[in-house]
Image (tube, rainbow, N blue to C red; front, side):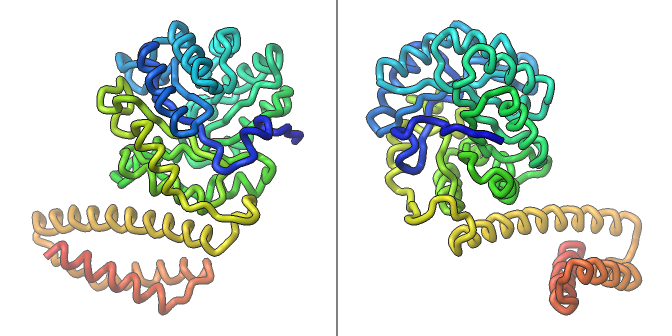
Length: 351
């Protein structure tokens, strides 16, 4: 796959590449005030959604085409590039005509090959040199992500980057979307020349968790960040809880610890430790789910007058799980000790 530099050397010479701005363009004044604040913090690319895909009808879905001048004018006044999301041919045509510099494809759209192809063909026909960011699909499917990128490339769009915004989860977790760092790492292994950006706002879902996610992304060698910022976050019409003020974002950028050396090396000790941290978080979330089921089993046993400890079930569980572990080259004694501890806690919760 042939790729050209995503942006000019002026933007890519330093790490991280930073894109910031509100979730939604809400007014000309809001965009200008936010842009001025971000420009003062050194941000040179302004983002905002004008078409906002929402799960439930009746939710705020952006102001549409009339919001494009708010974004473009604010960016121009502050000497910034403007970026927005597109989901179909009409969006592409209107955004490019309005003067948008960078387009991105959202998670829902990435999962739809027909929509991606329509967007790819429209960009190729109108302005194939336009930089395009492809967010990961909602589900953790690296092939679906890669396929969307390849469709754009095959259509003739060669200034591409990927954005990691986490994956949908259906059980309570600390993050809004599961970071699942192994997926963007796998994408990098398959396309090492593709710039990899992180959207910590959509992963975190809460502004107090944005900074740790940014640091993890830097530890893992990501090339840049796309962060949601609003001049008055608590008043935002969409995703208020995860947006930072420009000043807060400026402080975050100053706090980042950046590695020196080869920015493409994602296999260093710090990077692998960051991956372990993520896996540990996933393990804790899974244990919480398991204990919740154990509590419900305890309620059922009490209602039915059943004993808490059932030896035959425990022996069967141990046998099955240790056999599964052996197939994955895990030490049998190690797994037995873990299962015994989990079973002991499950029994405690049921008493």
